[in-house]
Length: 325
Length: 301
Image (tube, rainbow over all chains, first blue to last red):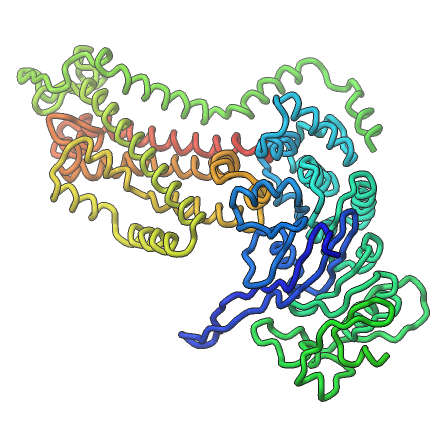
């Protein structure tokens, strides 16, 4: 395991916030990410799912080194991730890149997309001449399924799918080994989503990329991932093989998520509908964070925080009740 | 879909004459007549400002006491003093030319200074956040809450008056507007936008601000400049009118209006010509600002 591309151990990111209500509200700690560990092998995909505000994007930003860690450690190819904006951090951008949720916001609307794809080469001083960079940008545009005439377009002249391809091309021109995809398809049309996901799979096969794939579209995650981690309020509650995790979820929260996936058949299945909203990440309840909404909660869940434990089939679950099954 | 549109375009129903007219209308679409006029007027003002020494028929301070308060051409005057003379027999045209030079100089450099200062402080606030931002925001609020005319009066009364000090003072006018714009747009670009993405690619701050943020917010800044520029002219006019701006014998547009008001009933031309120049110049700059904003935005092309 230690030979992995990415090794994240016990990532914690807390924010100091002020509780509202009173003029001089007391300080409180918002636990955005609270002890997340995972590892990623080259050429593999880890899917990260969970509802809004559960810390998926914060985890992605921590992995990229865009946010400082409160505690924990990230190792990229064995090397501890250096501080944000340091020289070494900048150099490491060639190893790890990001794909954004909203491609139009991530692109500079005043610059032709081709020149934006060339820009990473200029930043890292790759390629001897402008012509050489241009050739490489043309080649990468072709590999993400765009044509030469798209080179001189402006972002607003392209469709959503084409824009996301440009963002992909800009990330891939540095030939990274890790691509963090933060909801790369959720801003796209359904028909385009499949195209982009297939493109991601093709590129992975061709270039041996590893993906940290963040999404709340469970079916897409199942399709692209080699491993899936389910997050709830800053913690991983279940992790394992996507097929087994989605066919027989062990954690009640995963069960609720999976039962919410729409299916085309008319057979009635039992849906597990959660009551209420997730608790505020400022005051996460004691014990299991999920116990207030969990239909199976017992007294032990209120007092004791469950740790991730391995099941017989190699999955890991953070639930007191799952070990028995 | 594409086949249909191309066949529609291919149908030769458009005769030759409308094509020519559409070419002219296309020209006026890109260069609206009002914009052409504004550009022409500003060009004229620049020529006058640069060539003031060659253009003015008399020295701006030359007295001719035998020809006091002569009316301009068309109102009983002659071509010797085309715009008449003032109460000391000084040629109004010559004084107007010199005034345009002084006022344009003050407004131009004042605007440049306040844009640079404000944008720079806005970038600093957005980049460092924390204490630096807090301090700059406090300065912005201070600047916005105190009437600038009062500050200007106090500074001029305290430090005396010189042209350099006066231009510097005009440069302090409305810098807070640029600081606010630059800070707000930079923060949003850093947090979820293109600037954050570029930084994530490993770019240095110089590249992020110089090549991406500045060009993106330039159109907003330029439009603000076209508001500040006339404001500076008017502020200079106001201060000169109050006697604290440009000092005699040197003359500026506001200065001319200020001293001309005593003769408004007997010799209104002393006041009217500089007033018209002020109005047309500020109006032209505003029109050009509108036009520039549209031209500079690739999404509107």
